Length: 450
Image 1 (cartoon, one colour):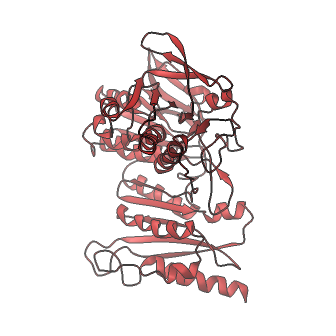
Image 2 (cartoon, helix red, strand yellow):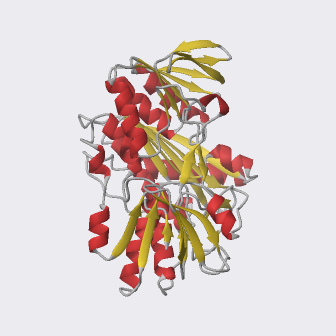
Image 3 (cartoon, rainbow, N blue to C red):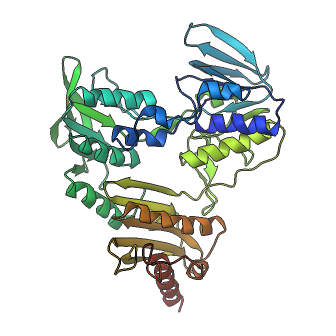
């Protein structure tokens, strides 16, 4: 039995059936859709993807044809781990039933955080977590919204800033912290992201706290902040997410210090027969060896695959994460992997960083754009700790994956410098910016040790 039918849940269902074709696999999904790419929602709203339906990888009918039971609008609300039963509410009929299980996967994901001021019935106030959320935002835009306030300067907020601006709305991003992208990048790179937004007409107000909303009739009319009122007929609340751990807690699973479900490398919770995977579940950071909660699509899918194999009698383990992430806003791409210098300092690591600017293609190539790299390593050992990249050709920051691969093997700065990277003028200079950064960081570390 699987509670949750998006990334982790459906990956687990498919892998379980492949591991054991005789297995009886049933997925309960409280929503209306399964197996869809939630990360694509801003791009449907922006027109880069034609429709919300294009985000759906597999339909219930397709999964049923493969032998996987799918029950939409069925929510698992309780677990009796001793009796090995779950309580399921059918939202179609309102009836509640008890279903037996041999193995149970809890893949309940995360919910968007709604501060007290955002708990309102005013029209035009949205979060963006699933397809119905996206459809609601589309309805507000199509209904004539002109002024949007996005509360939160993280991934979702910055992606939506571009989306809404391109749809013809005036956009204000309100961020409580001192800068946008505050949890993703170090200060200098946050400033580059902000500059890209402002150069494209998005207003950024950092160091600003939202205190409430104003409305007229049943529609929002503004956002009240500690620096005054901002008029708006659409408000997007993008201040973060919270793992849905209530079901796991009811089953007797331990909740980690991260606030997400604690599991071992086999995705087992410690409660016999109960597994957890996906955005509601914590993982191990391969650089720090600490438990982290980093809810991203690839992580959820991989956790689900591991859980599915093990639930069906196989043996698989999840290796952990290095915190790789990437996003674009307008032409700018930004990416990071491992630790930032700020994070390394907070952990008490003896870390050093270098900043290198170059071009993403050969400097003489017509489409070359400036690219900025910060590479971070541990003094003494030379171990790579992380990288951050920003570039006006947003696709060029995908080279962050080279560093991510080395981090998985606990690689050193010298390993990066000696890596045989591909070269042709349309792709990079003969000395790629990563190699230049590795060379400079090696010399920086050497100077500090002398």
